[in-house]
Length: 92
Image 1: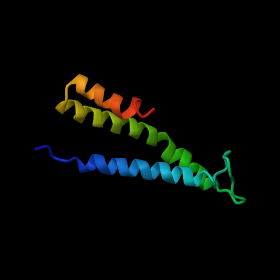
Image 2 (image 1 turned 60 degrees about the vertical axis):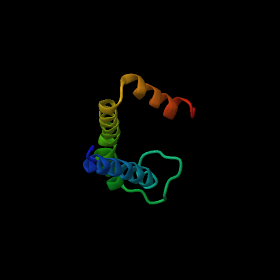
Image 3 (image 1 turned 90 degrees about the vertical axis):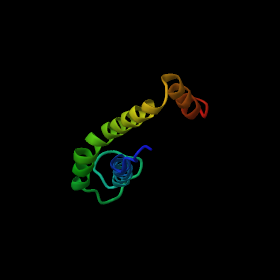
Image 4 (image 1 turned 135 degrees about the vertical axis):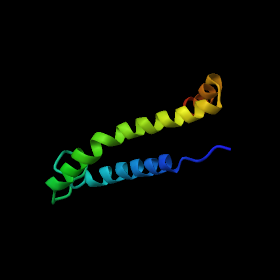
């Protein structure tokens, strides 16, 4: 039986929360965005651009690679590819 990797699950949760917080704070930052608040904060800009933005996309790529790694341990390459086609290409 395979053991569930809860650390990977928590990294996914943290990454999704970081994206949510990043987009919510864009309203208050000093850079351009669709809608802006009258009061803007340089602190929010530093927080989003300095702490969240440089790491979150890379974290998603790492998590995607980890998911593919574990999936390929239990499937052949053809099964993995067909699963990706069904989940990504067919809905498009």
